[in-house]
Length: 164
Image (cartoon, rainbow, N blue to C red):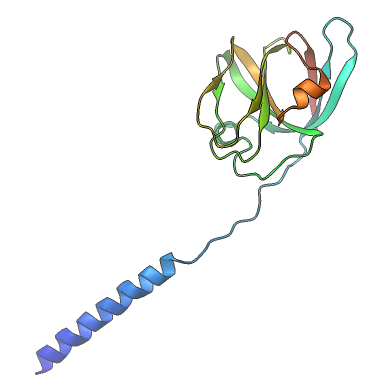
């Protein structure tokens, strides 16, 4: 009789632990939103005239984690902000919009700080590759449509500085 009671008790305890695990897995985990952190400033100048097109506050992505994550998981970015990716070597780079919730203009910039090419209005959550047309060292991401409204084009120059 004791062994039957022990078996029933163990079975009941096991069943309750599984139910408790299932309930625990249903908990909603919330995290703090990822927000912009100003790490520098960036200016874009017209190639032929050196006239200033725009000045931006920038967040800098240069570690492997930062460059892989970029603007993913964010809900938005202000129009006067951008993310500058700095790569250790000049190479062809391709970006995609996985887990990015708002449209972006992706500005590819060579090692001479010259705009090489621009992907305009990259669509949110699209996982298609968006490659540079030539080898680049930098990539600037801004809100979709802003490169047109600012008049940025291939051949324009950038300057940036970090906040110390």
